[in-house]
Length: 129
Image (cartoon, rainbow, N blue to C red; front, side, top):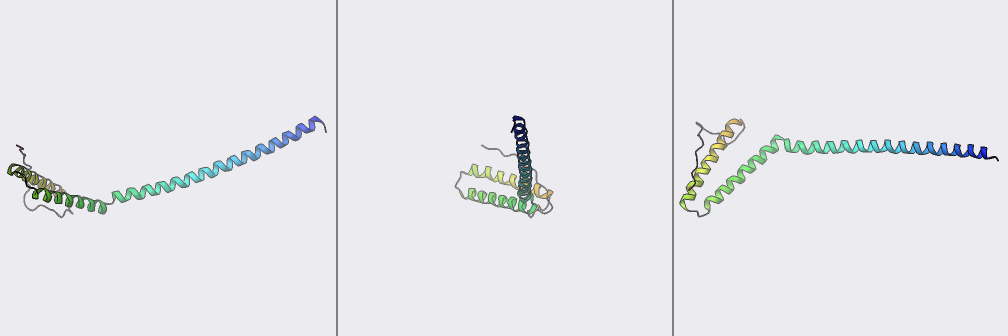
């Protein structure tokens, strides 16, 4: 066998090996792209589900109501603490101002269960001594 034949045979083997390597690389790239697209779709769907939970009006309404109930509980707790009279007067004014804000917000919300009856009150300035 001459050197020319060996060279041709080696070139043929190298071409075949290169083709196999190229095919393997292309297959890996394709399967990677498919896997990435699949995972991206799953992540997008999971994100949409999470966002829809927090943007759901019924859920928001429950949390707002729960927050208002919590603040009312804190308000009652503070009312039972023995404070000096001037502090109690200032706190009463603050509660009135809060109630005014709640009424004004509820007037803008047709489904508010704390609807104001009668005329709107204006906010009062609270002087703290």
